Length: 352
Image (tube, rainbow, N blue to C red; front, side, top):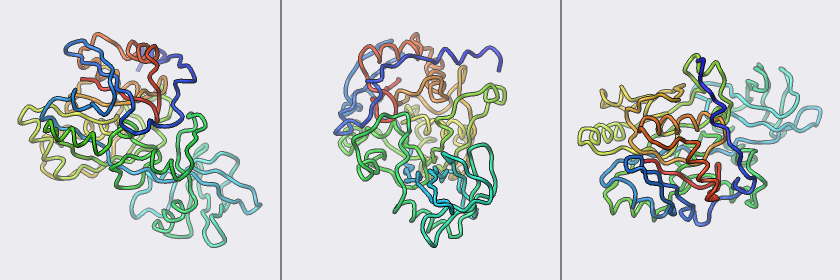
């Protein structure tokens, strides 16, 4: 798409504002609130989220679980290779798994977990390889749980959290189905206490499952704009979730999304959500950027994202659809001035 200026989504961030660890407790993180209807900006803490959400609204979250998919394997020469296995792309019935490698690997190489278990590189696309394990998927997941590491993004500075702490903190409190290689970070702030306060305001919470992949960190290209598509991710929306959205829309109740991954699942299924009473098991390569008319999402909870990322485009598209006077660039400048913490372990923003 000619004429779209992705450089408008660049910004300078002081290094000290890149969060190296999450807030403790989770809901003590800061909350940047932008009410587009009243053109009002306010600051609070996440534990008070319920005070800002529309009463009796429907809040949708992504209950995917991060798997410890980053691991060092041993080449037959004895060398070590770090691999990030793209578990989010491994579908049932498939005997192959993709992986991103950090150093030279060639098709035909065998990489060992131990003396019994290995994967063989059978195809290559740049730095992404297709591997054939000599064991089943159940054992693969077990080995990653035993030997793997949590795939915290490498742009985060050295964290003081050890592996076992990361498995808890780079994970939502309601994580259910394991396949993601990145967390739905907008939901890391939720606690039982926050959910209790939402319930007191009769705010209904429901879940979709979208397994987050490495594409969430990939740079946006001209091809993405030309094809109006971006990385593909798999998701499920259960029948009860479909019914909840249909009921909320029928009753003119607001529907909110926690995170851009939730937005992708909902907006890519908009037509189906309005027409079918059945569950949805699908995938999406939807690329949301301005201008875009949102069909399902009425308010958005999100973190502060990497410059020129597809996630920033989703949030700015939402602002423009709301006819907001402040651009995302304006809001980020304010957040930086107010020393909000950025990225995966950072603070959050609510756009109403």
